[in-house]
Length: 281
Image (cartoon, rainbow, N blue to C red; front, side, top):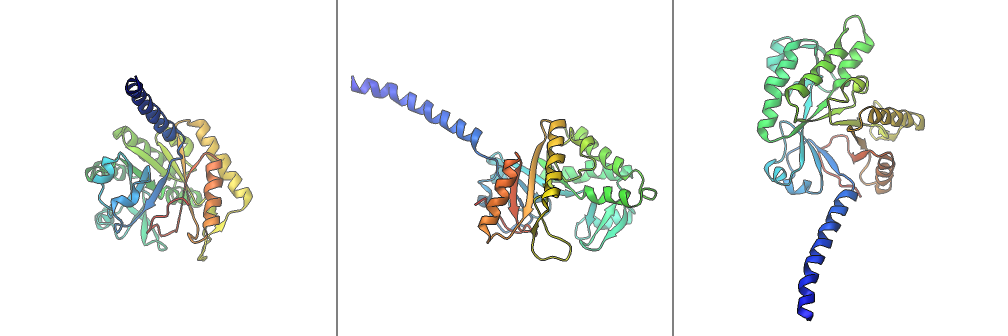
């Protein structure tokens, strides 16, 4: 009789364990990371659900694909750094309109339809071939800032950026897309991207400074209102945050995570070179 009870008890325990794992998966907060290097092994990223790597230099993707990770390739689509293999080709085609000397890059004239075609026909297929299942679009703010600063010379830059993102989504409907900031055009493209990255919203590194500082309360409240508005307009849009802080200040790092998670955001805290991985303490 005792053996029969054990036979019935075992399936019940298995069911309970499975149920607890599902509940844990539902309650466990999402973790993500940005890493622009290739020195670490794939095992260093096992605890992260979403990973942003540089499109040219990164750890092997296959072990992370096997773990069903979301793998986003960093793609600077508003600027191109002179270190990129395709820089000379684009320079010869006169795609660039303004140099960003701080980063050694050039702003792209996104108004040219050839640029969107190059992104869709060359750059995205290249990252998909490596095994990425999504992209993180950076430097959109470089494009929108030009039109804000000189609306006559750079008229149409914002709308061209909108068209570029919409065209990417149209061409690759299953591609996971994250846009870094781009708050000016978010109301127009929020339905075409899966995620918005709010970089440097709780902390920032002022020009000329060597260490990050916490932004003013009023500034952070403005960011919160903007991002909440975006989520209300686009209920499926997920908000990720990237803040910079000294890893040795564990208390400060914890404070940032707590503040960002309180708003329903998915945070990551690192150093601004993004050359190492710092798990949430």
